[in-house]
Length: 169
Image 1: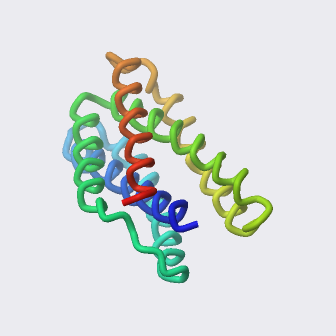
Image 2: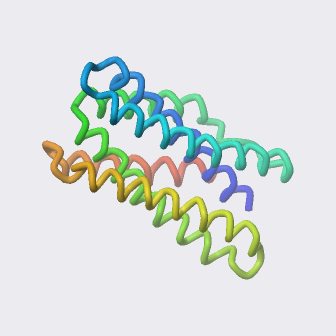
Image 3: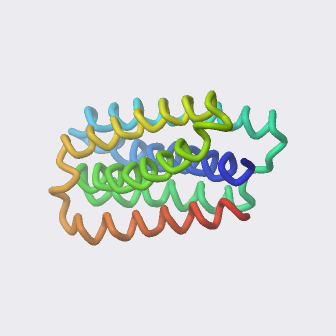
């Protein structure tokens, strides 16, 4: 259970930082007000998830990942970097991240359904919101981003590595 909570907390913390990085870049760019607004809405949803995991860590006496400062900085840089590449690249980042997160939550939900049904239900609701984020990104042209296949593969690989590392550290 500690690994599940630790990694989910790290993931939500990183999601907030990614959207914050994207919003900082796009919020300053003329003509990108609409997408900056979208990123602000997505960041706010992720902040709700993060707050829930903050509470769960405290209630269950689970320490957060020791790499939280590293993940936060890397996630902000990923968000800002993809935003600098353009709107579609920013959405490609969301597509890649949320695809991995959906898979990860699905595994956890299956594992927790019998022994922690209330937590499994919360994770299901969070997963549904992550899928909505991914769907929005796809609608906004994520898969039309220059170098989408490579960009997406690199981001997904990084996410999967961060998940494995955060479970333990």
